[in-house]
Length: 101
Image (cartoon, rainbow, N blue to C red; front, top):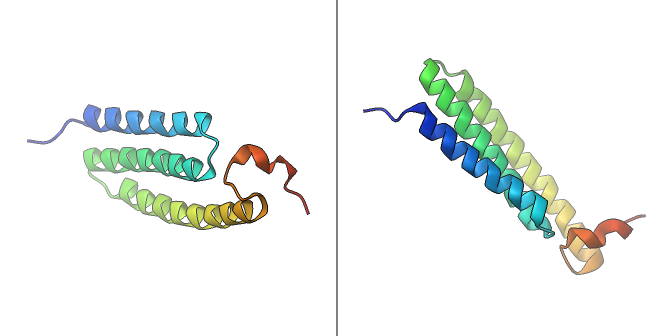
């Protein structure tokens, strides 16, 4: 018994909405990174679900590329957060308006 595609789409939409809500309401930079990861994982669920139901591996390959992109995004994001914390002793993104040379 296979799970219907609408359940994957509903799960993906719920995770995507949680990620968008996290980006729009949080001021903590770490929460931003986690929310972006939720957005990317929602896209991965869609890619894998459609790949499964169409019977090809294209969506799964794209999902691997999205995971690699997510890993690179986290590496760059953690570097930015460390600089933010070093300069302001806080990871609040509203204080970063004065971050200049």
